[in-house]
Amino acid sequence: MDARLEEIFKDPVFNKTNPKIRYLIKGISGDCSKPGLGLSSGDRKILTDCVNIVFHMAATVRFDEKLRTALRINVGGAYETIKLCRIMTNLRSVVHVSTAYTQCPLKNIDEKFYPMPNGTEVKRLLLMAECIPDNLFEHVTPVLLGKWPNTYTFTKAVAEDVVRTFGASLPVGVFRPGIVISTYQEPVGGWIDNFYGPTGAIAGAATGIIRTLRCDPHAVANMVPVDMCVNSLIASSWDIFERQRSAGSEQDTLNIPVYNFCAALENQLTWGDFTSKTTKMVHGLSIFILHYLPALMFDTVCLCFGRKPKLMKTYKKIHRFMTVISYFSLREWNFQVHNVQNLWSRMTKTDKNIFFFDMRQLDWDLFLQQYLLGIRQYLLNDPLETIPKALVRWNRNTLSPPPANGYL
Image (cartoon, rainbow, N blue to C red):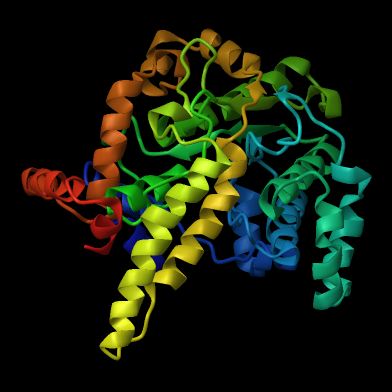
């Protein structure tokens, strides 16, 4: 655990942080897929005696995760966390981090709880995940998912019901962020450490691997900066505590707050800023010309020289990824954000400066510029000093016909 913490703190995001802070952090070994979160008795006692605020963020975020695994981690982990919170002697606030897309089959998503997906009971689902053989469970997965497009959104929706059902007596709330991408301001602009969602597509485009992506240019891209997301998350924990203190008694299900941290209606960005290819016909043609044809040419040359072809396999993986994210880039949702905006309005000027998260004030032009530079610097490990040479190479490549360009 200590070695893992040391590795985490080597990330450039901590370069501006006081080095002494590292030694104020204590790591706890556990596993969200196991009963009791896989905690030792000693670690469990530390948590139950010392913790004041709980942010439950652990999850598998793979859209194509096996349903059994997703249920164990996303649903079972939430259930075990709530059980642990119930015996914490100094608990002040619990925030369950969900996703804005738990109710993605709906067009309008309010800051409230919704019925369980397909009316299934939580404990029955968890029991099925433990008892049903793999081949049968795979067979019934589409039936269980129903209108949900993937196991991630489905299990996160079920996890919210865990909070509603088993956490009603706790000072608990649900936080639903949109598509979380790079930092806006803190500690540096543009920092990011993963290829999830649109980041993978942009990184692929920047390296010339991806040339086309299906999306509706007029649909709102519900992206949020990670630092503003974290600030709102911290503020929501304070709000949850204040709500229960004001109530003066244990809250019930109707009073559990839900926070949709999404793009503000007054300041939105569309997918048109990324691409304008929306129709399946144009997309399919572009895929063949810009992806498969160059890949076939490259692999053919490899075969001629006795080398193992691999580019077609790579593109098949890429297009599976593109198919998964197209569900979100071809649709638009109306997210109610009243609780988040009301929270912002109740904060002091000092707190607003420290925990800035007002999406209405986000400078999209500056943010996207930092985001793209961050992908280059932190994910592709390409120093910003190489930009002039890269521009020369880009201009040269764009003069080539698409197939030759892709081949080169």
